[in-house]
Length: 337
Ligand code: PEP
Ligand code: MN
Image 1 (cartoon, protein in one colour):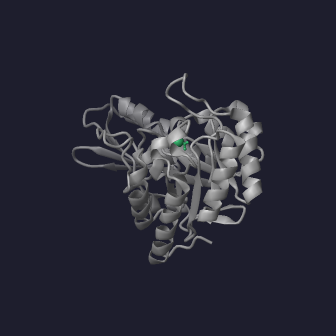
Image 2 (spheres, rainbow, N blue to C red):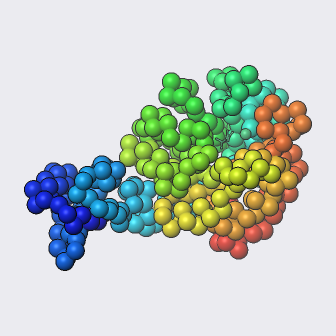
Image 3 (tube, protein in one colour):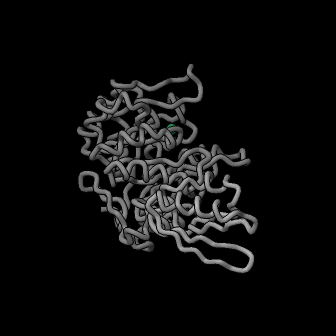
């Protein structure tokens, strides 16, 4: 980190500033030019409050040289992290397909979709039990009972399961869940992030509705700094001015994240577009951009779905997408075994 000190300052102020920085456990390298003094801060600058520095009278500018995240940073961990979910690997050339309904609605629906996506070639089963809905009057999910139905369906067809947690209070209920999803709305629920960071279970961390890539990586850092290094990032579209689609898929996030972090990154084309007909092209584009997996909403009867029917594929449409993905995976040096 570099701090440029204003030309007009008192020596005592500068001394105080340097002492304060040293008190944070950092070394200070001072270079005095004709017009300004530049302080180079050496050491772990993640603890430095950049806004506080800016607010000091004697500080002209502050520049971070190093990213504020460490555990998630590729600089300190050059090899890809591979997250292994019961033998299904994400990252490091391994690609996985997660599929299933937006919400778990009934035993019959869950078993039917589980069988269909398994037959079509999905590797993991998804389904929401605790649903984050904009309206409190909309279907909120089957909650605990939904979790039981999902786990049962996953066991019956032999697929690991992924489902969203919304509250710290529910952590114990997620014991038998294979991957815990932190949804877009909770990406910055820091208490929840810290708690799932204490688990030894893969976490699927979705990008917030309007969060930067750096904020997203800082959320991954919350989980990792508590000890849980098994984080899979999921780009699911961000809010923009465009209204034809529910969100705008930020494809550039994928190659950018490949540079910035060693964590696997998957894409959810269903929430990214809100339109079932866009799921296939966005899936293909995501694979081309380097995604390590996809999470796709599939329903056996989308017209009657209790949530997100408009973006859900029917099983036979999902099967078509799987076939196309499998054709292009070798071109991007990925395998789905
Ligand atoms: C979901 O995956 O069911 C979901 C609610 O997604 P998001 O958090 O991305 O909106
Ligand atoms: Mn959904």
